[in-house]
Length: 345
Ligand SMILES: [Zn+2]
Image (cartoon, rainbow, N blue to C red; front, side):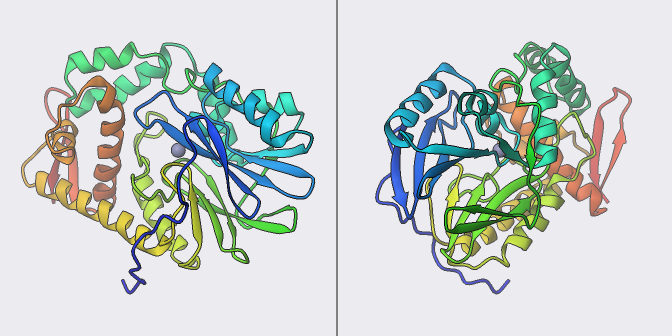
């Protein structure tokens, strides 16, 4: 690749303290919303124009998030109107409080249709079957029974952090333009991390709201989940990253986690290399016949896998395995115990 390999730079002097808001620049406010998980924050954005605000993403559904929002509405939004809520994708840290916020402020929810459908489906799928489906997906991977049993007893991963989103949206899709004040944002879709993730770009002012598609310090989760065991999310993610290389390299990137940065193309190339390296590791592991569990241990450098990290690690491994199956580099068969075995072609 012949991309401009400028180093990544973080141009904001500091980030807001957890649960607070700071003015970033040119009508953009930055909220650091706390999350009750290992990744302890999400960045939410308030886009301000002469007489109103637009909110981007919500945080998870919790008393803590509600308190932060109440404070921000009182101290920053004040008398101005809020015109709309835009939600980038269906994950609970982005959509968790969409129903509460849109109802409280009497505003429409702008969201990609498939993301909204997933968020509704996953929030309503709140019985024991939800986690049972994970254990069915993981059973043939060789995951130890004790871990499977623990996962089966987890509270539903989605609905514990997200309320059911509103029953209607204004759909946003590739190429749409959303005018906020004197600035027009173009919607550009990203795939692989979630079904149909919306990012927003304004080339005039050099701004790119990248959601979870391009993050500077961590890699977005690319996983295979029970809804689609044969999904090819990594192929979709590679395609998205290559598409995003056609965006100007000097955009200021506003990601959902970590800090705003410059160096979009550098980061995209790093993300591509990261997945290339992981695929190489899977290839090496498959020189011998192995299960997905053994591949996961290799991918995560033999770190102790517990039910809490396996529930995210296994979907990531399956994404890389499915990619190599798609490319015809490995094959899959079922052994006498019902485990799926992968081997180099
Ligand atoms: Zn996400």
